[in-house]
Length: 154
Image: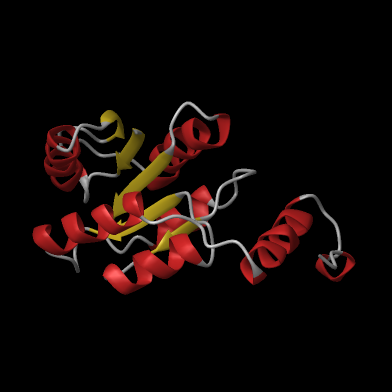
């Protein structure tokens, strides 16, 4: 799988470790934003990763900042991106299965290394469940297109 990963300066060390972890699992990784701890505003990394995912260059994205919140807000401004702040394996599973999240946002300050690895494994492994959740994703897409979500019925 092609993974796009990015961070601001708070998540730079984390993305280095995750890049090694993902490469060992056989994934191809492109890394963006702060790569050596230099200052970087999170919207820049969110745009780079989100753009790669939205264009199909990357299959999934991973963003890391202090809390994951800023990255999520910025990435979700890109058409086609469904970025979720995830705290554990369960929220990673639900973000993929119910929300078809294509970008996971992690907290460099609140999560440990092993927890992040487990979250990423679940996020990359799990698939969208479809079914009743597909209608909800269609409604999100309608909002993104400037339409009223209640106009989507199936």
